[in-house]
Image (tube, rainbow, N blue to C red):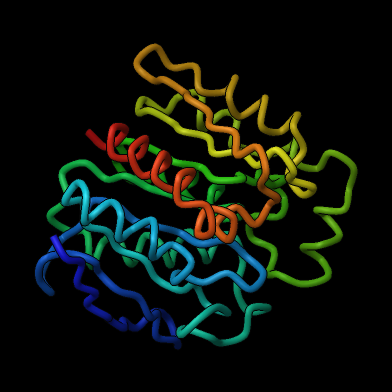
Length: 238
């Protein structure tokens, strides 16, 4: 099946969130939402991943640009982790309305967002790529100096609420880890893995041996590694 992208924009507070649905028609209600990371990230970095899922397995998806990124643009400093969760939930409620089993794929900062969404939504599985975790105190703090000050505290991620959330999550989790990641400590990854402890849940891990934290750039230039991730994701989605 040839992938078709159907762009959209939707009001959120005083902004418009820009994104697209990849599927067989404009009214498709995909059950997979891709959430990009921070920095210079945007939804387009996921496109080869999304196209592979659709062409090979018929799995449609949705992705959008958070405020401060990509086509959505705007001032990043006006946003926060809490607002990123709200933006993602808005997109789900508007474009994944007919979805019976929601699957979230989040990279870096948005791996945390994906986990937070399980508190308010029925989520079937999580794919967490080079996943970050944050001190609970940082959740409502706008991005900027105050936010960075919390993150600079040694081992601030240990005070995250993500451990407790994952311990009650009943779906499956796939961790995608970069062996050369100089942003996410290995101790954080180990604790994420151990936190998936509900009897009905299973956690698997893929290590990208030659990748830095910029794992999507790596995957988009390594077709074999990308193909393996596409296959693993399709199996997780079922």
